[in-house]
Length: 87
Image 1 (spheres, helix red, strand yellow):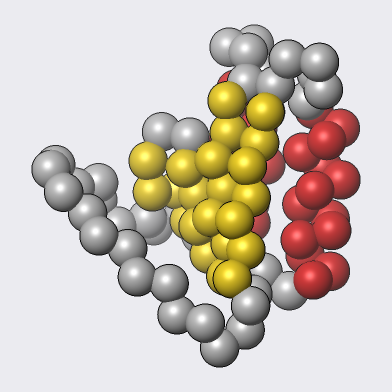
Image 2 (cartoon, rainbow, N blue to C red):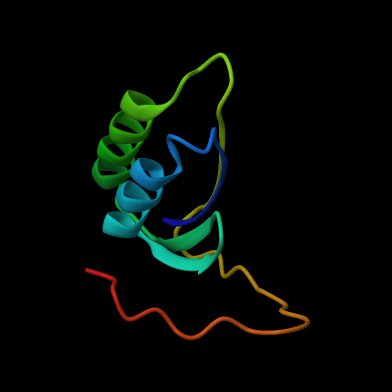
């Protein structure tokens, strides 16, 4: 499934969340990631992220699109370079 992840965490946890997200998804903007994950990958990703978060303060949004759905992204303004560090 295709997912978009947006996070808002305390500054001291940002580097760990960033590294975790980069292992699974394409980095498209400061705290925004997108890409395809299997259900198993999504469960592993969720477990890793929740292990870092302070659930009383931090917030992570995950938008998921079912297989076959084709999300359309519109981009206005300065664009980010294409990711080169995706596994």
